[in-house]
Length: 346
Image (tube, rainbow, N blue to C red; front, side, top):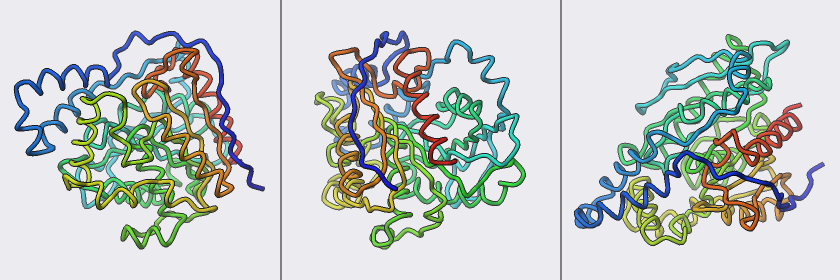
């Protein structure tokens, strides 16, 4: 029986990470370049997209203290190719070493503001998931501005078809899928789940329902901009400008809100068939309010969900905090993710 979502805040101690915050460096870089290159930024989304890609090129992931022990429990196969009409069609697989039966599979879509990021950004987190007996497929996809929306949704569906074909080879249970994503990837994962569970929405977007609805057991949504029209409301004019440019690159239209605001806002397309969701976010330069709004939409449709938000008065938690795995916040979040996945995959 489906239960209603309740937004619960957890008080924890969270040490500030030593690694850099990409959004901070994005802001600094943008201000410097804006002085010298304003016309380039206003005439095309490409300059902002390329700078954003550069900023996100290193990620912020930090290993947990026992990572060597964790990694010994996992087999990693990198750069497998899935058939696609687009480029960048590569997958990294993370397979638990000791399993008695086929394992559920997380299909993870990386973030990077739709224009940056890479599947390798998820390696530490994916390895940690696989060590808990959950296979993970981290996919690359053709990013904007080289490919336009909805290319990542199409490619994720193509990756699923490929995974179905190779499932027996890697002891994957393709009937127990978890769609997951971080940042922009969380938006893509949530939208793909909505397409698979809402036939009217699939027709509106002219996308096929490729993944059987009952095969998607859950979604994991980290730090996502789910209210796409409010993606550029992060309390910083410079970052807002950047976010608007990346949306321009992704949707291929400068005034993208006119065409895509309703279509790409996830809460508008939730039905009672949407899969159970785990939603989390940081509280600084991120999209926490988006996650809360999506949780409310799930509640209104009686969709099971668990949320994990960190009160700002407790500690600062940056965008993509979950990848900084030597911190209490990331560790507590990870434990909740494991329990959630196991609950819904049996």
